[in-house]
Length: 223
Ligand code: T5A
Image 1 (cartoon, rainbow, N blue to C red):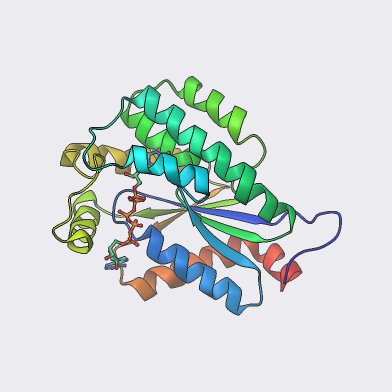
Image 2: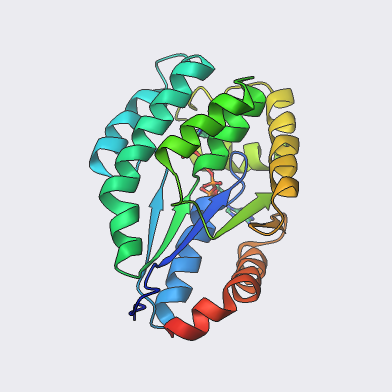
């Protein structure tokens, strides 16, 4: 079911966190749960999610290419995000649907901003230009010690090469965790920080509890 009437904008939920924190797994489980409630919900991801943005993803995550610098990365991630918003996210929200996205603008704040040392004002300018008032209603931060997330990502990857982000040293990933916690602390009304160390079902239960507590009015209106 979708929402109708003058306040028909759908609901936009994003998942954030370091490598291997379980974002893709939890995005899928949340969408399944929302669909089971009769809601029109779908999963998407960044970088990517639309045809043009998936092409840019190929450039950014090419394991045979070293990382671009923070400025070039921010521009590429934002070019991908502009296409994703224009062709998938905004139209779905305008239809009153729920969109659950694996990474979004907080990834640029954390990776290219805090870790890449791109000035916060520059990142904010790009965000204002591209995202505007289409930002998430709720952001779930899956928080996990970096070494656990990296071990999970490596186990899943097997013999395949990691991308340039996964090959960053462990100090990078530890700093990334702190950067995300700082970003979340600055916007407590939008963020729910979830301990991602439990098993998949325990984390999924915590995620749904956060969705219910933060978005209960939208769940009630839509269902
Ligand atoms: N990036 C992205 C930027 O720098 N700036 C930006 O603006 C954006 C949008 C994207 C890279 O791009 C960077 C960040 C990233 O480095 P990606 O390939 O999309 O790269 O990688 P990630 O988003 O990091 O996603 P991963 O696939 O590495 O990890 P997930 O999605 O967090 O984890 P998931 O669900 O795939 O799980 C990993 C493994 O752990 C298991 C799963 O089964 C899987 O095998 N698992 C668990 N195991 C035990 N307990 C649990 N609770 C588990 N949950 C999942």
